Image 1 (spheres, helix red, strand yellow):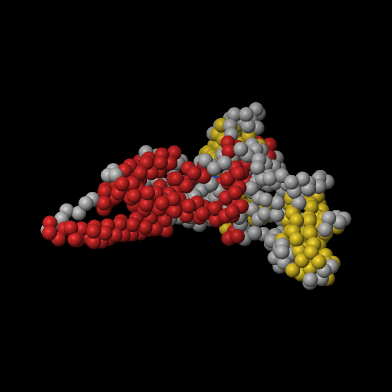
Image 2 (image 1 turned 60 degrees about the horizontal axis):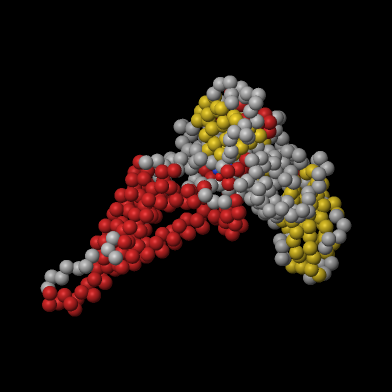
Length: 488
Ligand SMILES: Nc1nc2c(c(=O)[nH]1)N[C@H]1C(S)=C(S)[C@@H](COP(=O)(O)O)O[C@H]1N2
Ligand SMILES: [Mo]
């Protein structure tokens, strides 16, 4: 495995076996397992998968060794099966293919030869001493040989990993233009500046990351193009220079994940810079019977976005900037989609490569094929950030604060209730746009004892957040965020 990683990296032929198997595995992950992984490991889910694969491979290597000892050729057969699985995974990756399988096939042959060599009976030189020395020699030779092979494998694999995988293209800085349409200046009261409360603007470094990419795709901005095709009058192909030469719009948009549990943190708010998707769709000329745009990324992910949402006047963007800088590689460099009002899985395609104008009837997207709803409008929700659940507070005034969101409708009110009592109005931070979350604060006169706090939001249409509990699958969780607080 280590050798194959190294050869794949040096050869630059495509993904290494760990990446290929991990991504093939991720593609076969049902919705419940995806959410279980996110709940257990959060955004470290990929690290957990990598460790899992390495541990399983270690166990299978032991199994191969024991099988080879039991019967000649049997261990090599175990390696052959593993090689076929890894080669199969490599074949089916968007960046894989036939040529990309040779590192794993060649390495499996090398591995099988090493295994058989290590376990070959030693040829005695001196028949007299042979009997006595045999065991000692064999063991020493085996340990030395196995140690050398494992050492080489670990070094090879590590070098390949830390050299950035099979594609050594970095993310050169883009020359982002100033926005033709700047975002509104932030009102002073947009951020209540309360310790422990999520800030209005989420820094790029702490912005949640959710995607199916085991290794962050590296896209060369010089080579990048966006192809707009399907049910259009004429295909449009855009280079990055084309895109950067357009009038760009700057917009505050809160992005959230359908896998976010009530009270969860798979949500963030950023200042995006980009070209309205509408502009390129209008240029291509969308046919009247189309109702969906399937956006695709370089790594095979796709999202189905209702056409009408991309054509109305909201800031649905082909984004190149995030909080004043280029998109970080993990967030879609060089270009991603951001659409206010939809969960990320049906809109926010990172490492964007195509927009296909089509119909919901005719095409399905990545997560739709895995049991999630084809359309994913964001559900109104709210969260308590402070006090932290389980913290003990002193009696008297306790600051209760959090965020509430219903992108593209906007939050009109937030209420808090204590121990199931009457709903009390919370104070709201200034509204920036209806596309962002809104902070809120409630000054609670806390009496000693153990208490339950709950929050609910109301949007500008008068819709009140439901208390009805629903899980994340298939179209987003509902229910009220509730925390327990002890007051001394
Ligand atoms: N290429 C690609 N884009 C993707 C995804 C993905 O798996 N691959 N995941 C989507 C999902 S489910 C979400 S919630 C958002 C998350 O964006 P972020 O990682 O920048 O927060 O990206 C979306 N775009
Ligand atoms: Mo998501």
